[in-house]
Amino acid sequence: MYNDVEKDIESVLLTQEQIRQKVSEMVRRIDSDYRGKELVMIAVLKGSVLFLADLVRGFKRPLEFDFIGVSSYEGGKVSTGVVRLDKEIAIDIKGKNVLVVDDILDTGRTLGFVKHYLQKFEPNEIKICVLVNKEIKRAIDVEADYWGFKIPNVFIVGYGMDFENHYRHLPYIGILKR
Ligand code: IMP
Ligand code: MG
Image (tube, rainbow, N blue to C red; front, side, top):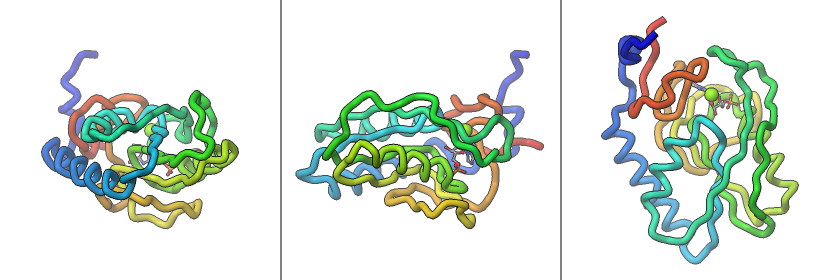
């Protein structure tokens, strides 16, 4: 029951140091693009939590953040294709510049759904920021305005990302043993 989770990791794909450097680069880019503009980040639970926490701590400018809860995987490694809303946003984004923050862009179903949901609240604009961008053919036509790493179609865990809700707490991104 209480085995070391690192035993389940085949290899480390992105180290803590690589992630740290990339997140600071992303902060610099976002900071410069949003100069003089209001910024509201909407982070997608639960995978974005570690990324969001590191990202926001890089900014000195004012910003707000809130969470939206959606689930697209019923556990396991294969997307069910169905996205369900688990938690609504609780702040007013009307007329605001929204930056959606998520761990990974895969089929695009999650972020497509989130974008569509947020549009109802009439924000000024919606942009998308993900740490990891999987290079696959999307099921839904959605792309990231900001992304940290492009990776091939492999299943990763850690730094927020899970397999059956485990491994989210790993400070690096790894590939699971089969
Ligand atoms: P999409 O809806 O297919 O774009 O997938 C987005 C969501 O699926 C992400 O927010 C993740 O929670 C999850 N996901 C996609 N690929 C992976 C992966 O390789 N490992 C863990 N979770 C993933
Ligand atoms: Mg997930």
